[in-house]
Length: 199
Image (cartoon, rainbow, N blue to C red; front, side, top):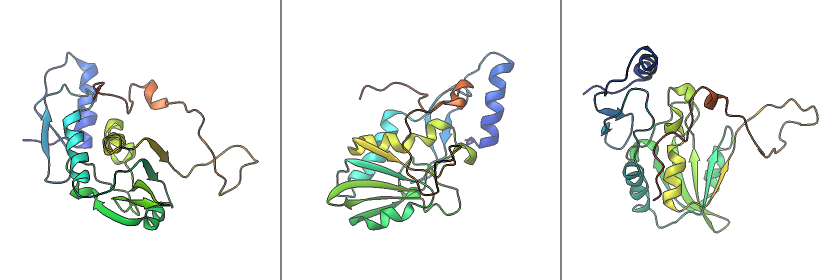
């Protein structure tokens, strides 16, 4: 059974505009923890083949291997991966170990999920995240956030390195994102693609 590669996905998205959609072969997701898994039949270019049950499988794997039930999720951006090293009584999981989880390909990203205590608060930290420029569709980039939700996370802190046009900003300043323009969404790509699951 053929697995989709980024070049396959680009081709399939292009074919969507060339003619009527035909059902695709079973789609396999590039995932870790036992290789590739057939997730469901989808149309080429259609939204997420990650279902609630597949995401729950990833969360259940982690919950079975840690006593912590994180309330805060932290996605460590560039240069902040060391924050996870401050966690006490921690459990570490390479992304490759977690069933169905994407694998980070960016140099310098540890590719690790760390669950432990930060100031006695149970947290989960991602050391390395996923990007569209790695060839991942946005729904797959957002998949770890869905896993965090099923771990019990109520508050998500996302960090990143950013540039600014305001001359009053200086390197090291903390900026809070109040709003953003999803330019990729204007072209039909969104991390919110997929079924709305009430569970």
